[in-house]
Length: 184
Image 1 (cartoon, rainbow, N blue to C red):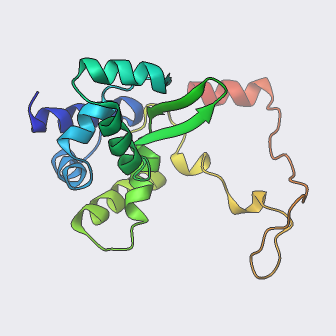
Image 2: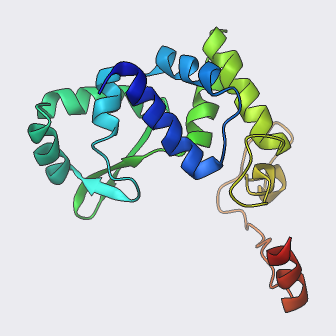
């Protein structure tokens, strides 16, 4: 698989999750500036959905001629970039593909101002404004992001107090409202 193919495959994966990505060529160029082809080969060893334990990943990597040391090195670099998630479970270390929204957010949070950062910022703006990319569902992303008012026990200087009660903002919706939401 050529370099362009791997980036296109990553873009297709993100489109499956988010819907059509506008300015796809520009987005792919930004991806090329943040993740290498070798890192993408390791990324695609992860299951499409769900997680994989370290032992199983190492076996899969060996078949792809990637050593355990290489896979660990790659994942340590791309995890903070938001491309993958890695965490400990009772069964051992686990890995999974990261959410494209989180990945883009990590790129936008960079200190240095790069062309890729600008592209990811436009991508994030499109998600927040719900204008683009077109979403698979009709819920705008800004409606599912955590909001500041959920933090209680915050002092004037922004310190969050430990053991402060957090109110539950969830509610049970009447069937009429749910039906209307599903129909729209």
